[in-house]
Length: 137
Image 1 (cartoon, rainbow, N blue to C red):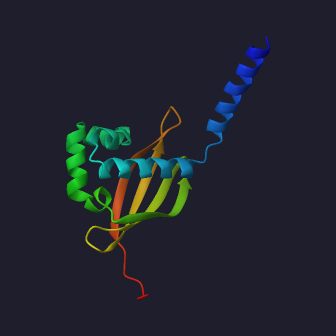
Image 2: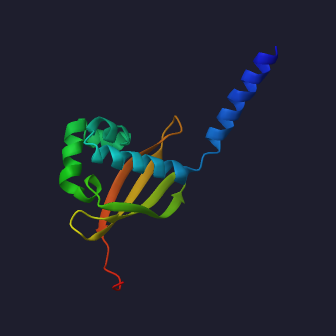
Image 3: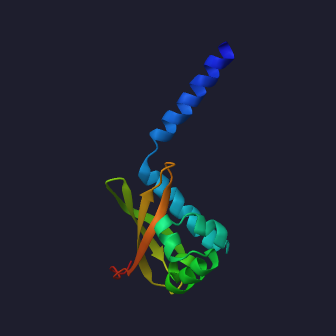
């Protein structure tokens, strides 16, 4: 009986922890993992973070990966990146990612992540904007 009570408490604690997960932290983990997949040349893993809407537009993981290489080369091969501002819009997460691009310029990637029925977040789109240079250091 004691084992059943302990097991039930563990299941409830794990479920509560999942329900209390911060959507921004979750979104950042997804972005970080997808960028790692790009750096590892792992199209299957990179594609696994795409939302159903993105998968509809790019139903093949290799076509998706080639699109990223061509149109989002600064995400595909960032020199360095850091998280900027984030915002919750309903259940969606909008997250800035500040990138030192492979071209030596600064870029901002604005990610939209959408929640899934299983509680995970998937990347639903990214807009790349070249960041204006700041004052010299």
